[in-house]
Length: 426
Image (cartoon, rainbow, N blue to C red; front, side):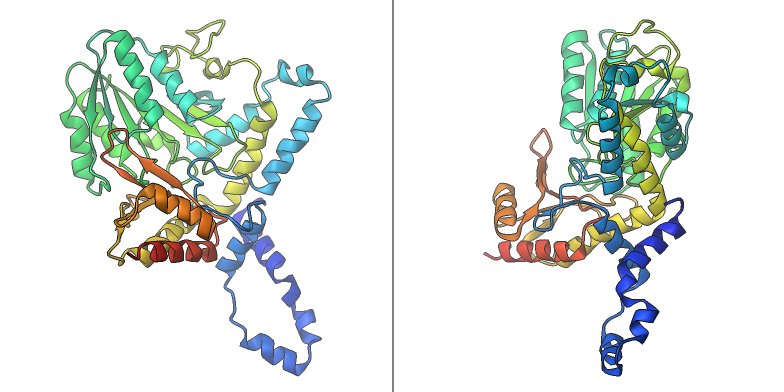
């Protein structure tokens, strides 16, 4: 799987072996007529059918909660198992080698992110990466932090702990979801800035309804007001989901989970720290030189799952073989597929934008005649659909989050659509 053309060719060949020309020529005329009458599958669908077979997902329950954690392709599982088996022969020799075993992986992640390997640290998830930044900064009483009520719960909890311990002031914004106006979104952040603002927290792709915000525009506006303000981006749902480069965003820090849209092993994540910010940011875990200007100080957390880290490389290879443009288009197509099928139902409330710049794979809805909890339970029990019930911390937003992935079949979405239509009846 070195490039997209080979990837598509392999998928199409695997899916069409039974219908090769020599095999077709040996058929009787009657069989040929039957074959000609069959509906022809285009190459795009052959590709996604092949992709589906590269995952060992359930054939009975449709997983529409890939936003929490995604399954890994078989090739990633195989590489992970290979390293796990190998490392178990002499664990300490591999684990504590002086060689930087993850260097090659960081180089590939940096290429994907559009930055330097010296700005990339591998860790375990977005929460750990965000906490590294939040607790790595120095605070004074009265310092102001800008964040939103729609940020991830654990992120808000961490900032509230900083507030309680150091006396910082949290300035809460509230975005009306779905938010579909760049100017209004940027203005909400800039109006909150004062001479006491130290950090602006931005969620790239909202975990509640999949809302994408214009990070680059927000960052540019913030830096134009005061270049000293630091911008921290929660990119749990952005990386390997939508097409962008971290280096283009202009942020100081970017945190993400690799076990979501990249489909890397469970418990793998990534922290980007702009080179100029590394030295002044304290590591979350103790380090022999905590004020070093080397990115490695953020990857020092004791015994680690090195086989999982090394298998990230195969997940990157799989991702690149498909291509981010094609992947993003497919994910947005799947989201639009189910939303447009139920949007006209008067009892269905769609809570996600259909504008491509404001949403991709993640979508959210509620039924006006049933609670979210009841709908989730019935979809699982009666239609074998697994999804997530979501809400913001304030209780202003609630809904059922639907997150298909590239392996999701439209037939599974049809079953989900039928369930929603049935349950919407009073």
